[in-house]
Image (cartoon, rainbow, N blue to C red; front, side, top):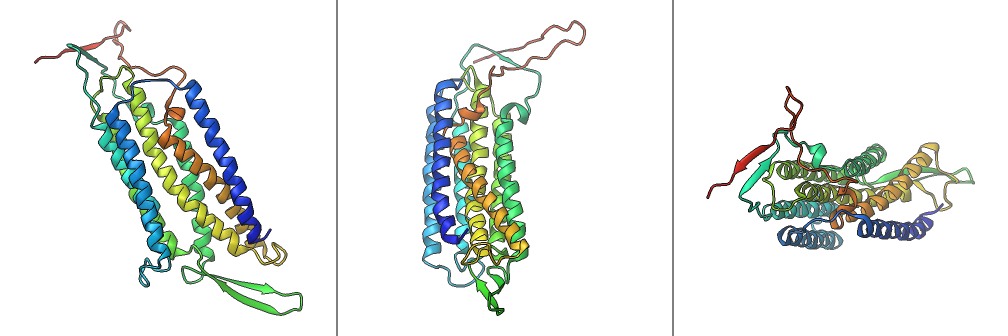
Length: 318
């Protein structure tokens, strides 16, 4: 397989990813649990998505213009700040949207004495998606770090049929010059995601009867932001790894180590494409993952002596 073939296969895989998005969206339309969608939260999520796209495009444009020409962000490395910055904008927008949810207006309010946990508001499927994406990015980054020459190049030694040994250097290559700012961005976004998830967990109840589902939707979109950032890093890093490991005639003269790296990069491209699709679904259509077969209500504690449910009732005073 040559680098040209990789470029031809990538669009086909992207088409499959788009088909997956369509299937998931259709599943969400036909089977999702419905609840009130508050204008403030919706507007914040869409505005955050648009602003994130603008930020991502701006960093890509600066990188293409080769600015700066020297320093730690030279040679296009400034583009590595784009996905993390865009995800951070989206996460903060969702946090602002959570603050717009109106409080209940009932004269009598009921609340559970059992504390809600992250397991109640964060779907396990969302955690699995982000764990797989970040895990694959970590594996590819470690391999690239080990194979890089000088932080942003790859040097190969090829034996020609004539017996001549050719030493070639290829750049750009995702060595530490690129992977260090990538993982700095991932760390910053991860901290922001944890803080916003905690805010979603402890915020006051809204006036929606299925408030827990609203929390699960918001948390799914927050985790989806991290999935998108990780996948937007994983896809180019893995694609560059594959391209640099291949010779002009494919795998004919590559070493076993290079074949392993190319296979890992190919897996990274596949996971990256699927993760981009899943991240978009998690951000735009969070109900696909947030719904449950039986939406959880507010849990009530049981009296230890009688086993009966003991509600906590609070009268709202003007």
